[in-house]
Image 1 (tube, rainbow, N blue to C red):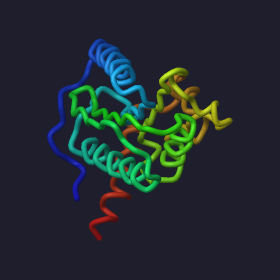
Image 2 (image 1 turned 135 degrees about the vertical axis):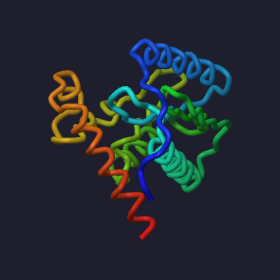
Image 3 (image 1 turned 45 degrees about the vertical axis):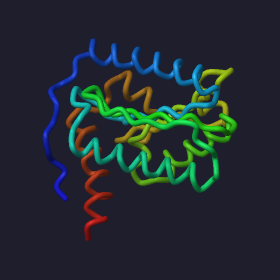
Image 4 (image 1 turned 30 degrees about the vertical axis):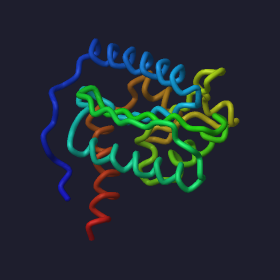
Length: 181
């Protein structure tokens, strides 16, 4: 498999902020409609390109893995939907189970799956809002490049964009090309 393909146009900061606001509104709407904890999945995609064939493949894998986790644990899903957007793919699941246990399971996926570092699985409680890793006494996410706290590297722009995108490409190729061998 070659990790190339049609790539959408660069996304502007204004487009990203508007997409984030729309996602938050959809999250509130789903919480109100289903009255259950929500898994909100997005990808870690630094830079202006948020939609590409490799990113779609990455999201499809994340969706399959999350579905497998939910099915394997027997947690009922009231609704699920994927959104394939130029600002990056998103997926939601309204899950009939405790938000804390759901968060523990999604953190385990992010930490244990070879591509999990490229997934951002937020869990939103009906009453408590976003359940963070600190709820589980877990450290924050690590940088893709140097394994320092991701927020510190991101804020300081410690690593140039080509270095970050090369690391993502390496992770994708190691996973998907391995599957074709």
